[in-house]
Image (tube, rainbow over all chains, first blue to last red; front, side):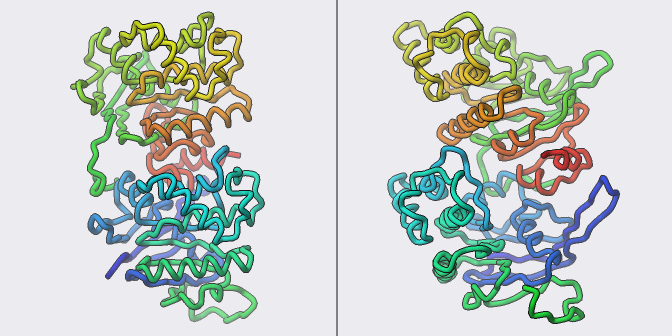
Length: 238
Length: 262
């Protein structure tokens, strides 16, 4: 079952103060099936994160289509109304980064439970699930009711993963979620991604160390322009 | 230009179309249009003189545009609201629209008690029972995180942050369908600003209030808004999802604004 069908997608940035255009990627096409895991490769600046953000509509594309097969029919995310994109972000499309957007005076467990509450789950049940995932990612129990604004980077990252992965989505965009994660949390993350994949979540990911998720990868796309001409260096992560 | 909504079937609560206003030689607003969906927060950014506050005053029916239309999708509210007479406007504003101004003097009677300021809203709407008035005023002040032991102090004796909380309590006392915020935290200390923003965020999440917030401060807009509209010289130059406008601004003016942010 197709989840995403990207056709001829092109993205560049116009920098008005310089009067210049900077291309990011051009004419990218691929399809993604339910439960499929796609790895984006390419050296720094090849446009991997830019592609993820374009699919999420944080960036506007300049050409092509992003046909997302939602529960409510096929919709072109490149042109969809803002309200539709907002709705899909709450219900079907997730974006996982390594950074937590902490909010003042919102506890770690409330932050993690929020996607479930917004999806209509009963609050005590959502809180129970939130605690389960905080535990799974290795956040110390003393911190669950505390405010993550003051947490260390590592702890914030775990809270972020718990929140981002608590609600199974149809499409999950992963922007280096394993970067700087400790061994235990990384194992928990890989296990959770495997579980979601088995449930049919389609995933597109950028990983500094793709080895972390090697077992999950079904397919790779190299975004480096003229990729074959580049030297093969083992000391540079792709 | 994006497609019309295809999944979300609810109608916008607020639709303003081609709102224009001229003051002498100055075109303050030129065909400004906006839609806001129920529970959504629309942020409007722009520098002084961009027309953003004029537009907000039009939405609060305190300013008459030269032309344009404005509708709210509410039971018993029909037609172009700009055509309403003074009495109907006053009732609509008192019962359905709340506003918080940058300058508390515009929104509050500075020498009356804070609770009295909030209760005044309820009085206009027809509530006469003293017990109910006091009870509802207390609830609204509490929801705005105002210290209740000071509810009888007049705003003139309060700090700037507290005055904004009284304005907010007054604005939400009648559970308005629409909350308008005009630079609600400008001029406050940074730490106080964060607390007031936090209260607004919390209220918005708990009550799903539809909001339009105007500010020149991108941080404020970014914190609260789902969608952003950028104004310059009385016109809308760009609009989109908040993260998109801030991460991938399209218009030269928006790029300049975003890059100038610390």
